[in-house]
Length: 259
Image 1 (spheres, helix red, strand yellow):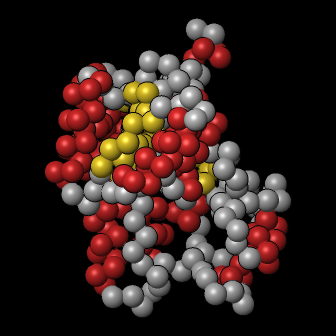
Image 2 (spheres, helix red, strand yellow):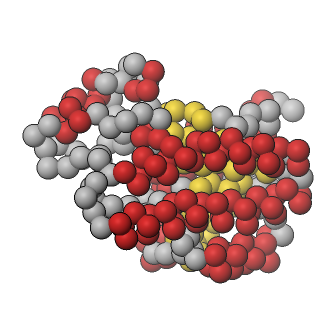
């Protein structure tokens, strides 16, 4: 197969959890631009529909569905609804995340709520759709991690600022996601289903100038991530161009974790 043809997602059905956030928007757009019939799902369907309306003006059609990742019934309903319409799922992007904690001293209930969605929910979504792919004998699961699952927080980035990254649940589940990726790759590998993790670095979202300068200096490329930087790796891992890649964690961080 021609290498450019192998990067096409035409004929594939993709599912993205949490598709209207900072990462979800570019992930979803990338899948659509590469030709995949794409479903995105979250609890806030209205936000998804607003994003879908933006895409419609560009000739891209996004299918929006409800998903509560903390509820197994909701997960199974989403799976069954998509299978009823499409008969298959080729690509799953685990992108949804619940940010329930604000710091180390939060009530334990906020940690428990995070784990229900970000750990148990991740497992349940992966199992529900992974079993479908395994039965078909093909598929690609892509987990959206973070460099915060690879390194500890750098407190010097936040000195003198009114925000920080010292939330233990996020580091816990993003770190666990990387090894969960390896487990899933091993479990489904004999049935030709791949699983990889993408760990983005800091995303520019109008943070204070001093933070942007500090963070940018920590990278090899001298900048924060933008709203295009994940698109290429997502299409590559979702496509047949990466058929022999599984069990990996790929930092997309401008060199932050290599410095």
